[in-house]
Length: 218
Image (cartoon, rainbow, N blue to C red; front, side, top):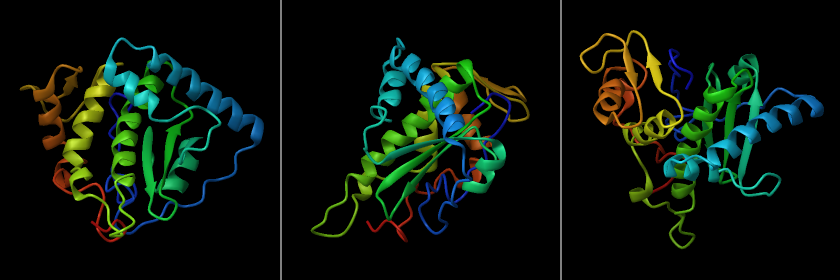
């Protein structure tokens, strides 16, 4: 969610890997490099865990404790690897898996500082909502709770609110607040809503459910 660059949502991500398209295998990363990248992610997450903002702290906690299996897998990739994995360039993305009932979370290896912390908070908000839906599965019915599903607008609104508490967003070319270039912080709900409606990325799909019923029966 780096300022000034829109993340394009596709069927893997927001429709949250729901209806039809699986995530591609991630290009191999050498263990030392992978460890270095995860260390960088974890340092950013730890900073978010100490945030004065409760939503940021909660988002950072969704990833769980490092090294403990909890169904969440973090990948820190180059843009080329990111595109191979999820089909697009992105600062971050979550990809729930209907087979494993887990969530893969992807981050751009080039991010650092507040940009990385903001993306950790943004994707952590998505992650918490994703896990909430996945954990609503009822073995007796074989279905998930439709009430735990969200629209793209709902999940992105909350995620942008949380991310903006770390660092302000800047989106040139997308109007909001009566200006041609959108800029918003965490308390500017009207601007965030306008941005999501006016964005060519989010606007057309804002009312779609995150989890499609094809892979996620409800």
